[in-house]
Image (tube, rainbow, N blue to C red; front, side, top):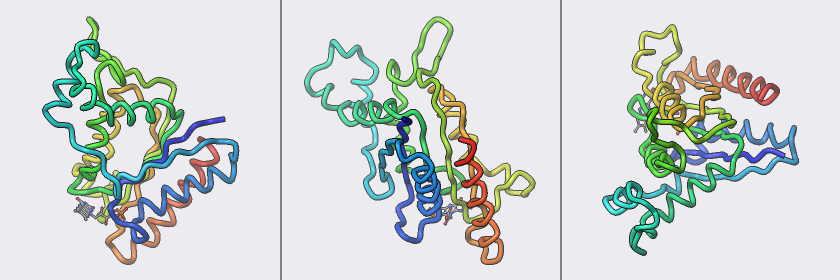
Length: 205
Ligand SMILES: Cc1cc2nc3c(=O)[nH]c(=O)nc-3n(C[C@H](O)[C@H](O)[C@H](O)COP(=O)(O)O)c2cc1C
């Protein structure tokens, strides 16, 4: 049995393409693997808090020195990291906002990228602690950021997500990028291609 963590981060509901596509992946996966456990988190509608000064003081001090206030400051982060580490695989639906990810997804990343929980620092430098897991990240973009597009260099979404998840050790990531969703004619074709990529990914994941 595989444990899957499915996260959406669009603030939109029914009109969200990233939600629709991540749901399609998870529904298809569930149909093929009914024994697997899927945990769902909706960052778009239920954002997690930003880190604050107390959080930082707690995260960068030894747990045995923590006052009740510092312990409390990390409570949500601890829960999110426990949930993250309990999963073997991840399915993320992520809109492109201003060439990058929505702030709700960034706030989540800030909560789960934590020293001694998801990465370690030693004499050799930084080392990711999230090992042996894999992810499918489905992005939704209004414009075309495909590799041959003139706008490709403006895609800070996929490179950023590869970098930050790679930093904590999660390097096996497949991206399914739905481009051109604000362009009437191209949108239909783009969604068709994303759906085909989802079916392929389900078969091969
Ligand atoms: C605040 C905001 C910023 C956006 N920035 C970009 C952008 O930089 N590049 C782009 O191609 N589309 C951009 N879009 C369009 C979205 O990426 C597109 O509508 C996508 O479908 C949103 O995901 P969703 O359908 O899951 O909500 C932006 C939309 C919003 C609301």
